Image (cartoon, rainbow, N blue to C red; front, side, top):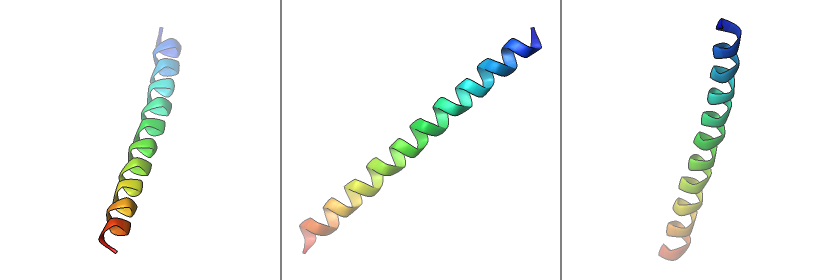
Length: 39
């Protein structure tokens, strides 16, 4: 079923993009905290 695999592929890409942005936000927060600790 190509339609089914395409749907699951879209869902996987959607979840992966959410996880990627979440990881980026965590990295940015850690960098900000390190900069504040240096001051």
